[in-house]
Image (cartoon, rainbow, N blue to C red):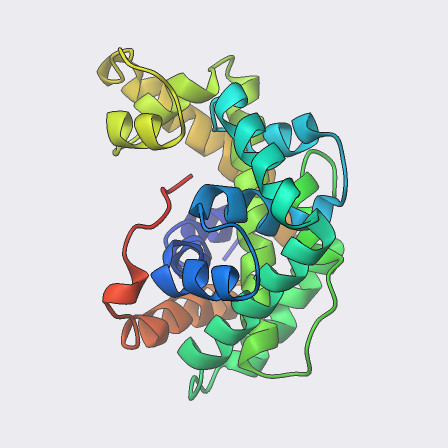
Length: 259
């Protein structure tokens, strides 16, 4: 398998796997129990992006990309009055590890998936990928499901960054990119964009083109693996998602949108 074919498979495997913990109701519950804001978006803003540190608020807005800027600025500022980004990032890191330890427990390919994922993470260019760098530089736990899942979350941030770059290169605004996707107006509303919303149907071809461009960008991240390893990585990623899916409950419902 070449790098581009592997990149194409990521959204349906690593992307979906690492999305579940951010959407889980238990993530918000654990965050609040740790002293984070009760508003899930405020907690998300200082948790998922806590690795950026005590940076200007607009650095978070830029890294998050798809949120309506004024809406997210307010959430970041409110969240930071409750918990500093460094501390929020540490809380989300722990929750991520705990989710992985639970949902990848018993997955026989966990260690090998982690080994391959770590090589990709260490190889990937940081350019245009601030949230990826924030996660990449967090301490890793010992070898095991928690470590593997943290690396999968880090890879999801990498794929997200490549997608954002492709949206910008296509000259499409974040709102238009949202409306061109399958969840359209629902996502736009959740991300804080006010109605009325533009029609996303005429953007279908542009959406396919920017997704293809994002895959090309992401493909370079997998050049550190050889063909056989890329086949192995694809199969392990799909198997990990299938394994985790057997442990999903109503807790994994849509607390947050897909980005």
